[in-house]
Length: 203
Length: 203
DNA sequence: TTTACATTCTAAACAGTGTTTAGTAATCTC
DNA sequence: GAGATTACTAAACACTGTTTAGAATGTAAA
Image (cartoon, rainbow over all chains, first blue to last red; front, side, top):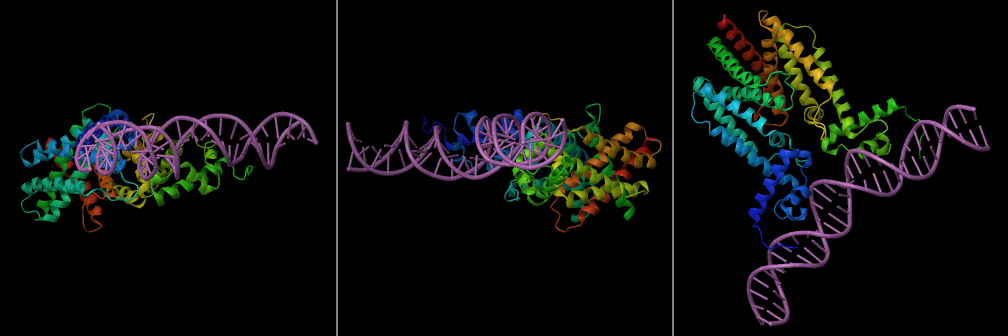
């Protein structure tokens, strides 16, 4: 029964993660189990532990892929005018959540029971996303200080993230589809306009 | 061993829900189990099934209490000027999430595996919250139509909800505490100012 | 070629989970 | 007191993540 080195450790990791992604997409995170993933790739559950330290570890590696994919799509939007870029980021972010609801949920809702600490790379990636937003905002408001830019980026992005969450959980109660795009565009527009207005009145 | 009618069914329900809330607050939702709740109130796990149809049912009843408590706190804010009311709602909402992180997580992240449908009362309560927001917005913009009010309320509240989520997951990366309040105030201000500006330019 | 070692892999066990069921024990009704 | 009803639980079932002991296979040396 023991097939010796039919797959390298790397191939096995990839195989397991792909199977897990498929299971996640099709059945949801409640159906993600070591035995199911193992069965899907023709190995026993115990074999997974030669490649992952735990199911938790596997989930975080899944999350690493999801986040990398999301950031890639954001990067692929290319160079745009600051306001247009912020809108494009927002639309891309929310569209990603809608396209991969289970992966997105796992990324933002998965918490390890023991150490409540989240992997470093996740926080670093989110930090980089915020930096990119701050660059856009700095173009719009060259006179704004770092603290204000940081705060504005976080406030604006909280809104975008909130739309993604509520849309995913069907908590927006908007009869016709496609209103999310309009919401995001007005979210960015109103926020930036309100920001500009308040900066002008401050001088 | 069988203590006959030491507690009525209602008292048993209350007992179990209180114990579950305590367990949830102290240990997190990963440690919520029928056996643990039962042990906490001195009954067997099977007894819980005479009062709840499943652990899922118990969780939703927990969520019902959490939401009722949240809405009560929002109601207790009383009558205020529209803009002040919206800010007060936002601050109260996010403060609630910070005070009861586990209850809040369960309310917004718990999904039943089988029917992905969420209880009706939850959606109705959220609908009522949105209605209240729309009333405030209507005061600020008497000329705005129902659709615009609905969309604006949802967009604004997505932002507030987003701050609550990201704050809860420590994804805001803001060194000093207390910045959340400032974020929420500027979120509401910028959005309302941007909205007014856009309405004025439309006429 | 045969023996020894190393690696790959799995079956089985362990402790936990939600849930069901069969049966015990206490109370109520007649 | 006898019988029916209710309250309750122990035990079982099927599942979970994880560990462990050992079998099967490959490699290398003698």
